[in-house]
Length: 426
Image (cartoon, rainbow, N blue to C red):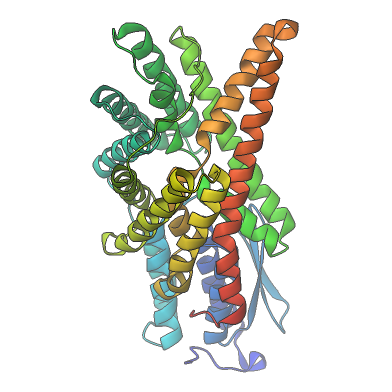
């Protein structure tokens, strides 16, 4: 490994040490903020520090990173919150680190290059809106909405929500405003459609599917990974953030139904979906979420193939073997992790974003929204609420928890085992 600076800390000029520290801190902050897992952020920053002749350690927190130079009383605290998910930026930043470590990029050129990589434009509004509609409609197919009217309403609702999110992002950086408003739009459109259309439609699906594209799955996975790596405070902070986003989605959806003059209906039993339709829709859903996370087109085939394989296995387990949804999600996520985990480090992609893209349609959004709807109904009925309502809240809440736990365990276990027994490619 080529060292940009001299290897002895005592021989370093103060300016050289500060420059090296600044490069390492900026790299770690950008990776952390754009969705790289905490462990890969720390490993990459430490690798860069060694290449610069400055052994560094990174201490992550929810809103900041502390980067210290070992053997010297020199450290830097950089503000960074892990709110983003942009795989294209992570790839560009990692490529710059590789060039620095190989000695093909001069140290004085690193900071401008890193800043440029960290400000690469996100996917265009047209693509974002189009794939939001495709992703929501694909989820509609998976959950049993097979008629053209319902799928059109789902796609239109998701597209309007995507446009609203992009518009809101131009003047508000609050991470909760966008999902709240997008879910509000979904609730209003579903309520108005249920009242005005003179044909039966699966109102719950029309409402829930556009909201499913808002679920912060990568944050749930990153939080679980941090907890397993004993980064307790950071893991709890990530999970709390994800939980608040889900709460805003539920609140916006219920508020939209209220504004539309309707009550949020129960989803009811799901309609059986043919295997081919389920697998094809899963592939489109994976492509949509890969686009949301700015995954380069050339890399989409991997998660698409993994997601379609996982859905085929899940469909077989539930439809043929009679397994429950949690067991189906567990086996499917293990398959995805086995396929994805060996290559994410080689491709320098965030594991949580790639893994979640492949299994997004298995997230128990329906159960979460059903539980939220039942809670609201419980509050409105008060002491007159039937016992079945409490049973519904408990059953839907427990099912959602078990499915999320099964998905998290299924995705993380193979990844952790491979990292333990194999030396990762950095």
